[in-house]
Image (cartoon, rainbow, N blue to C red; front, side, top):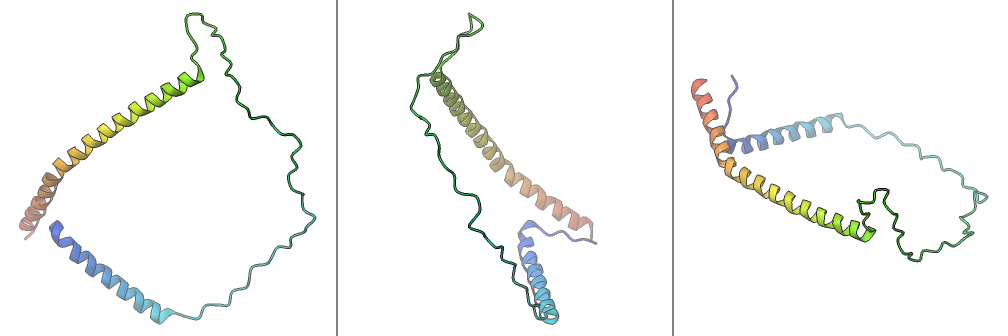
Length: 135
């Protein structure tokens, strides 16, 4: 018959089981230990100096800022926004997203904190009733 323990009594049992497991592991290692075999060194790869030469830069690119090219829309009534407006819009949308995710997170944390004591008391009740019925 399996006996369930209340959640407060589980920690000492786990510590005792861990201690027993470590003790048996140490005894096993002491009696089965043998000398480590001699390992062979890894072979060393020969490097030649005649390998490929370094990268040679043949042309320097110009990285100066250029004015954005606004491509006219194929639909006259749909305006094309500039890159700066697009980046600003993306940043605003990301800010709205982070605010909403934080609100959802806070709601879930509050829900968890409200439910946790009831779940623990239900667990203790079930364990107590199981032990009473299994006697």
